[in-house]
Length: 318
Image: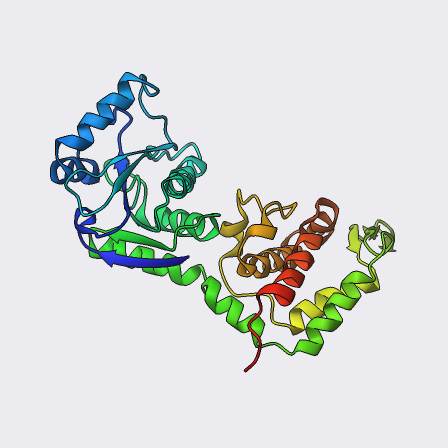
């Protein structure tokens, strides 16, 4: 999926679906919500009232999404989502992330390939734009979706700049990562898979050292001990330049790929590289992160996904 940024008016975007930063009533409001209802005309409001008369009698819950016609907009559908009000005392970032994730899920149900998205919750709901941009970009980047273009449409230059910084921090695109993997020597990939095939349950067992007195009054803290086979595989992943530079702590937070690798088989190979990054660099901040990835399955899922990419998806030279 390509993520693009545009400074301008979201109601003028020629896309399959426009995402509306709606309020729970679904009956229009200010900001993006009001602009979409005004330009889209009465057909949008009519369908919103039908939703309120049926499934959403109490309004659309925060973090969820639902679609209506786009009326007179140059799009086929409007996907309404309700963002959370920012709180200085409560972490509501999962709700904000859910807005984008649910909007893309609905887009997939509709068959929408191109989607225009606003900066949800950054208006009267008070979410700081830098943090909102970080959450939006990392969530959309990690979403499992068939959408081919997610276009963030930002009304102000400041918001556009914040999203540009967030996108730069998110690191290389799926296509750029896949191209870099394809450029690595074939014989090194073959060595990686040969070593992966030879792994035994004993190789995957993690022991813990430390705990002993290293000098009078000083006890060595426990630390994970990984076997030679796992250590060599990790070294090979580094030699193959699988890890990438990007904001992995934000990417991994709430991501279903961690710690079991659930869904990685159907994700872009770039997400295998991102998951390796989170595993390897996470170990530097929290001893046992690699062990957790092994125990829960993310380590094995990465090797499986890379093997499938190498055998079935990798572009052949020439």
